[in-house]
Image 1 (spheres, helix red, strand yellow):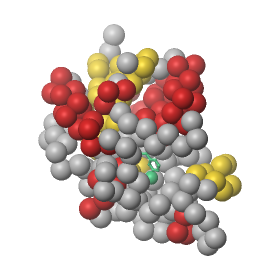
Image 2 (cartoon, helix red, strand yellow; image 1 turned 30 degrees about the vertical axis):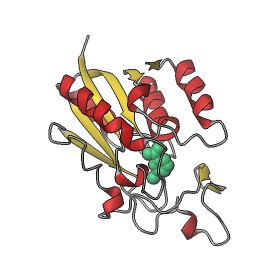
Image 3 (cartoon, rainbow, N blue to C red; image 1 turned 135 degrees about the vertical axis):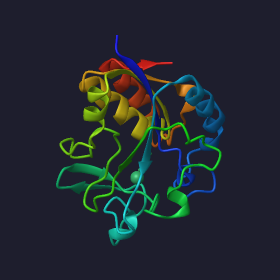
Image 4 (cartoon, rainbow, N blue to C red; image 1 turned 90 degrees about the vertical axis):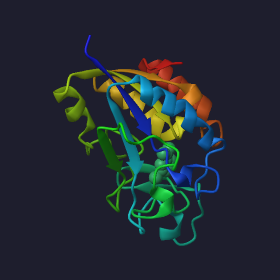
Length: 199
Ligand code: VGL
Ligand code: ZN
């Protein structure tokens, strides 16, 4: 068996109450994740990190509203309120998150024309973030994931992890969902079908 790593997904102000894309109870996961961070030798954080004119923002598409769906060159894309803009307070990690032990911060969604839910690939499913290479080179094979949001970035990351040959488990107590139109149930089923352990 290889090494274990904790991957903490997007614990940023904009996904917590008061943020522009707040997930219900998003801040409640911070103490849970801090406890997990204390238990792992290898901790990796992801950070949603969009330019102000990012193409996933409804504000960039006249006539469209947040949570509408559009077709991008790489496939369907949900539109969001402006969130996690590079350098903004909303993009910062939650102030109580214990970021000190993290050995790597993966930023994603920084190309204007393409969104990225997964910690491994952008939404074209072809542009890698470099995380798989990092983990392989360091012999980290058993991944525990938690964070925001369960049904978007956590789920896409966990499914890609398994597809990339890693073992992946998701800690629900350390995750909260956006849950648009049943997306939590749908993505939980997809994770299970892909071979992700859900705890
Ligand atoms: C996320 C929507 C847009 C997430 C990021 O972290 O789940 N969701 N950007
Ligand atoms: Zn985003």
